[in-house]
Length: 257
Length: 257
View (cartoon, chains in turn red, yellow):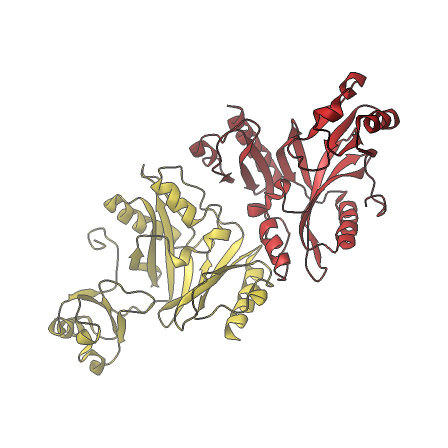
């Protein structure tokens, strides 16, 4: 669909067998990422192939299920766009978010201001939403490559990289999703202050320390702590960028404790 | 308690009988307000006495229960202070709120900026909180009289005139009440933008019209609509006072429809 809509993507190929994989590696080259077509998230259901020996037997290793091979993109940054489309076609976009991952899991999202690629990301995303006659929130992940964007993934739902909107936007992605689905007017996607979201992966630091940080809003999922599992996040909403950067360091320090 | 703590109040007297009432009216004068000592809210359990004939039989009319007679205060405004006190005695205050009532029911609360009586209100309230060794949120209602304050009522809980803090303050009265009771650090009571709260009394206007107003956050209680019952409220959080005033007019116009 991306190709038909004129949206750049990394090189990729359908993989139904180890023979498909070998052929695709020969064509696309290494490094590349092999991803299962379904049920992948947080780095699960994917493997980075760097050397020829990484390719051997890898199709079976991922369960011999339909996969995609994706050429590795030398990106300078990863951004996501949270969009919402109403039943009547009205579409709104939140500011682009800069994302930082660790071992395939989103670690930090920072809402941008006047990002130079905002208009391009909105253009690409609009094409997809219109083509699907989509209603609700959809998240678009892009790689920043050579001053442009390559579509990485889309998620037809509210998205982790939009969690900051709970406190950081006039109307959150959650409320806007419900408004869209219910046929109600969409709410403003404008930022309130400067915001970031930090995921708590495996463990939530002591609550009394998290909430003692000014401008910090704790979202605790009440899940059992387990390595690699997202068990909460902190939303920071600050009066300016400089304060936000300081407060991010404080939350990161807690996470590192 | 107010008297012992040096906090001005309207003139008042304990009323246990019609004879008490007659004597108190003779001493305090008219107009005055007769209030039941318990279970009064939203104008219920009280009667304004303006003329001598209003006094006749009024004690029985309010159920022959213990009452207070309160001298009518020629106030220039009504403000409330939402305070929160932690287990360790740390106390924080939200900005003073200007309240407008209609038939004894709160209609509009507007959060102030740098109100000249903020420090005085905090001083009076601190005395009460400390005396009671109180933990949690407490609301203090004051009359503005001759450039000073007279204590009207206190409510040992989160309060309708603090509902604006859900979107309008860094940490809401609800979260701060829980933090206090749970022995956690208190959150910031600083304002986020300029805020007001409008009660929906009897009926919530059509949802699609309420949420189509920019900066408007609908809180719908899901209660049956009934005259005189609070069934929801709208919180407005705007970037400046001028915008806030415009948006208040829009919500008021919806209420009047």
